[in-house]
Structures are given as structure tokens and as C-alpha cells.
Length: 203
Image (tube, helix red, strand yellow):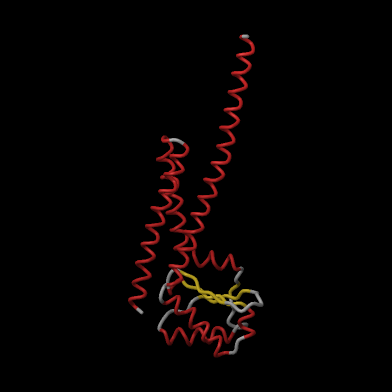
């Protein structure tokens, strides 16, 4: 278990460093495409975006995931069994109790999020709570808690964020190339028209 935790920490740092370098290369390519004078600015802007996104995903991954899934806090009075199972599993595993959430959805599903056991959250759908008995629910929640304890959630969050930022930068580059190409075509067309008029006036 400890080897897996250490491995996930190394993977997280390696992924963040590789992500920043990759985005910097993409920024360099974008700057060179716009002109050699813009190369430095392309790298700087891309690096700032990469660092900010990595930092934000590290500290706010749980909030982002919960907000996107529209999860609501699970009150102890309404979801007694949910809390009781988590309490027992956390005592047995010797880990702090994560924040518990519920998603209004008939499909049975569950996920864990957070950078470490001290800042973790687990969310389940109402469909899961309705369709599963106590033993089945305990198995699902134990599986999610294992992701939290082993810090698998951090690696998964960084991976998703990295892909999202690369897609965002690629979209920005595509739009810049499209509109930049359009401006160049208009400028070349305007220049040709002026040359034709000059030739006509001379003749």
C-alpha cells in the first residue's frame, strides 16, 4: 500500500512537470507561427496557463468535480446508512472520514475525489442508494475509499486537467490560425487591388 502511495505521488509530480513542459512547447510553436518575435511570449503565456491550471486542479479538484456533477452534501439525518457505512470503513482503515455527497440520478454510480485523505470527498447517486443493499453498498464505498487512501484520485484529476488544458490551447491556436489566415488573405487581396489600380492609372 505504501509503495502505491509513493508511486502515485511520484506520478503526480512527473505528470505536472511533463504537462508544464508540453504546454510550453505548444506555446513556443504558437509563438513561432505568429513570428519569431512572439516566441518568448508564447512560451511565457503557455507556462503561466499550465502552472495555474495544475495548481488549481491540485487544490480544487474536489470542488470542481462536485460542482460539475451537481452533488449536494449528504446530511446524516437523511442518509443514516450511508454515513454509518463510511464511519465503520474509515475506522477500520484508520483514515479520516471524507465529506459525503449525493447526486440526484437514477443510474447507480459513485466516485471519489480530492488530493489526499484529509481533503477528500465521496459522492454517490440516489439510484445507487436505492438499488443496492447494505453489503453491496459497503463494497462500492470501500472501493472508493481505497482510491482516496492510495491517492489515485489525484493522479486521475491531474490527467483529466492536463488533457482539458491541451484541448483548450489547441482550440485557441486553431482559431488564431483561422482568423489570422483570413486577415492575411484580405491584406493580400487589398494589395493586389491597389496594384491593379496603379497600373490602370499609369496606362
